[in-house]
Image 1 (spheres, protein in one colour):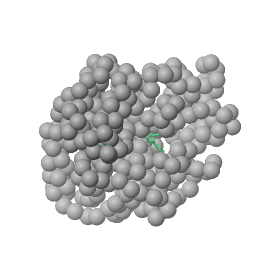
Image 2: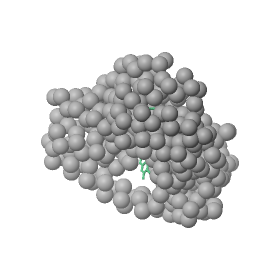
Image 3: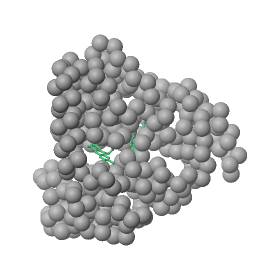
Image 4: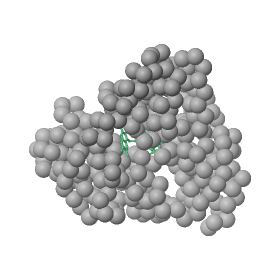
Length: 302
Ligand SMILES: Cc1cc2nc3c(=O)[nH]c(=O)nc-3n(C[C@H](O)[C@H](O)[C@H](O)COP(=O)(O)OP(=O)(O)OC[C@H]3O[C@@H](n4cnc5c(N)ncnc54)[C@H](O)[C@@H]3O)c2cc1C
């Protein structure tokens, strides 16, 4: 089996038989055949071409901070972009950022250049690609406010896609309906602002996160999108699930829209909590709670 993957060694560093517990912020998940860190953009493009020719199943991941990977083995390859595609270039008010850049690092770099627009992102532990995929956001701001265009790999080539060609909603974008499209790079147009003010806002928000989120335990951030009429955490509170535990997973006591891994949780424990909350909230409020977390390698979810 290893020969099936070692042929891709010229494109990047390969690890065989990897446990996803190490690569998801929730610290759950089964094994996969292989994980590869491409050397750079050219290597990634060459690899994608060859994988498609060889008909090998693969998935692109950033930092694994929004993923619930099933406990079952995945017979394919995960391409991790968070060690390559790390370039950030500033040109006046524009920022050219590659998909593997950490959102937190980017928010601080923008602040350093006295550019406003990413203050909201300073506590979101993902990559630029993952954040654009689902339109990450916080404090009523999101990834697409300052976006100009995205370099996307689709139909076997890389092409620039303008912002108005992408459908963007609250924690959702067209990328979620085109899961074979790969975000390579983006250009943002930011506003000039006072550096100290930007840093002050970022610090205030960091403190708010520390006060309200269970950052000392593994999680994947908010589990559910907020429904139109009430917040997800208040739905979960109302049905009495704050602090409720199944196996090693628990709705956090500190923030009930976070599921935390308190004791070597199985992915199934997390899924059982998700289904339980959905059923109870549907029964009490006739509201369907939609997960914000991405499901990986489940036969009945995406
Ligand atoms: C403590 C904590 C706090 C969080 N707070 C917030 C918050 O305030 N707001 C918020 O929105 N989210 C939050 N999150 C969730 C998460 O950090 C974001 O969703 C982040 O954008 C995910 O980025 P990632 O690189 O980790 O993506 P991954 O988890 O690696 O991937 C998520 C999805 O994106 C796809 N993807 C990744 N990269 C690419 C690419 N280059 N091209 C195409 N598809 C790609 C993957 O295939 C997968 O389907 C939080 C998570 C944690 C653990």
